[in-house]
Length: 367
Image (tube, rainbow, N blue to C red; front, side, top):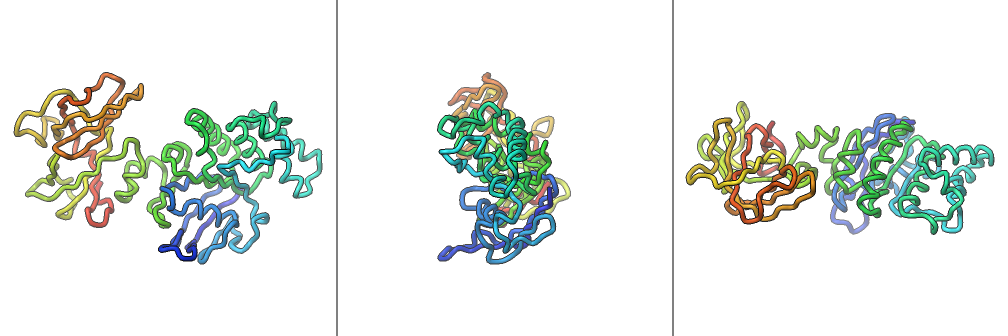
């Protein structure tokens, strides 16, 4: 096990309009599982390749266990990488595939066999060791690929979207298994994904990237509840957060759908973006009385007049997509007993749940 340190890591590809990575600095603690997450092209896979030594940085350093490995060959960095595409040898059995990296390092046959059996037991694939990749399912192949990494007992694991080409049910199953396994082994790990569910559920911390730049790093809950900016707020969460542009009008901030009081003790600019998570909108049947849209109720809640556009029932909950005077809103409701498309509803909001962002910079102002 080891710490992993990225300092000012920069990579620019020829003829590219911008750097793939622009001065990325991160510290991954010993035994931590850090998830790098962001949209396609944000630089997360580039960062992983630089850590692994599959590419060279134009600037900055990579250190593993306190040793600068920026110019060290991949095989000498003591890291193990698990890919999306498995990269399994089709003519070998799972046993031989898992033992191959040890064989290349000159580990004797008895020790190889012992470590392969131990890894197979961890992954519950002992009964598959004598099968070839063509005889395995997608999930079984991914377990073999993970086993090949585990037998090496590396200083760090690097996971490059290992679950992205599996079906939804298998992806959910392996997500749980992989997170539990990494924590059981206690090995420092960096996991790259574009899937916010994987990021939120697996990582000790999440690092959110956009266009090669680090936007925010922290525990999943902290990032969800206090996103650094509009981009982070919009990237994490399903359905996506409601982002509503408002302008100052006296003591209120008003938009087409609602009017909100400013949070106490905070100086806000004239133009802001109000961030409202779908779970903070409580939807009830019935139209808002004329002239009361945006008014505050007895409990200090704001009522928003809306109409249901689409309802997406998922079993335990239903996603509701609303039209509030031309402003589209997203809400979450429990179970199936929800308003139907076309019905008039009242969406209630506690102003204390609102996230406030600067409309110009996108940075969060409050809370």
